[in-house]
Length: 142
Ligand SMILES: [Zn+2]
Image (cartoon, rainbow, N blue to C red):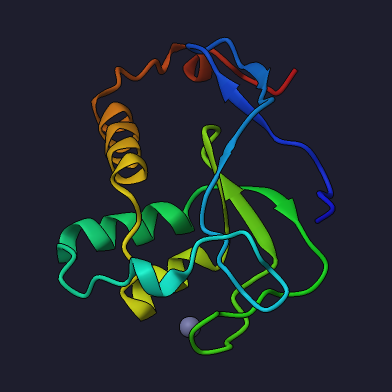
């Protein structure tokens, strides 16, 4: 796998500080003919997974930052559909664009560690104080 660029995330309160991300936890790669060493997605299928939690997970997976782009689409291990050539990240985890497809179309349930993390991230954003002063104080980009 060759990454086309590295990931940086904005952090800090209103400072516009950019932090280099040096280590991300990868998830969502699956066992395949040319991909040994990854988990078997069939072992993650759980049609009984709570529908709201599943929908929230799909939304989170689809709306993160694009961290890397690869040549060529990967294919779904279940239905062989092309499922994308990008990797997304939230600055903590890193996952392939196609992971949402597995969750949405094939009832793949993601581990509690990731689901707890995304819930905490969503809650943190929803509850955060918002500082409008920087933007309101601007009259031009300079
Ligand atoms: Zn599929």
